[in-house]
Amino acid sequence: MRGFSGLIGMDKMKGGVSLLGELILLELILSVIFVVLGHLIGSAYFRGVGVGLIISWVTSVIAYYITERRKKSAM
Image (cartoon, rainbow, N blue to C red):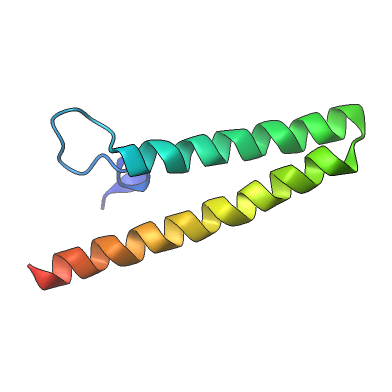
């Protein structure tokens, strides 16, 4: 079981988190910020940006896991 470290891309690298993992995590953080900001100031625009980033984050995570699975099956 890889847990959260596998989600953010800490797959046996000396430097820690991979660039792809950092970008996926950044996308998640930005989406939460925009959704919360949109609710606090009552802006549908910011909420929409947040929802778009959430959709993008989910797509990125799915693509990351598919490529990781293909890498492992190719070895």
